[in-house]
Image (cartoon, rainbow, N blue to C red):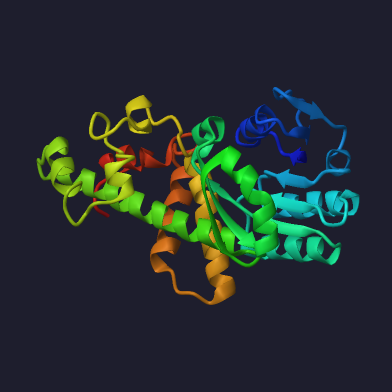
Length: 290
């Protein structure tokens, strides 16, 4: 395929490189001066989109997505597919899909899970929203960039799945860190804590696969000074998206709201910015009951 790829940062760059490595003709654009192996750089987003079978975007937020979409949709050929892999608000995803479809294009919102490591290794998980036809066009590319792609439903469903998943992740990480901090104060050995919880009803991904306690469980950012990983400010972004969606849908999400509040405090007024989201554990270690 001829692919335009807009947004060649820490995630988009490796994803585009993997597509080029697989033999696709990839033309890229980014606001920063970057060079990606196998990718021909264009002078604008519209230039990268011109004549492409598929245009992929990986952008920071919904406002930038809407702006880029306004540039690339008029440049795309009727019948081509716009695939947005950014994590943005559901309303922006649906608005861009509607604009694309009105212009005779296919559209997929397909945020990813797996981080920079997954982008580099080609092991991402894609959560996709859009028509069956659009998903069928994008699926072979998802298979190159990732290890799993789930068609979640119509436009916006991919973003909904990502936001709900990461709300669970943020809430669960806080609970896991709180529990370790409590165990410390009760004199319970962290390894014993892990051995019990990881095989009991407290089992979770944040405990078993991404344990926030250094030296316990599989290797995780906790074993590397809490270097991300998944940065706390990105978790905060996703929790804010979850609460924006909850407000729009009139959904009661008190735990999600509290998790957003705690991560906002951690990132904006404490020392959490630039730290992995599991660095909530040393935060709780230092705190006392209020």
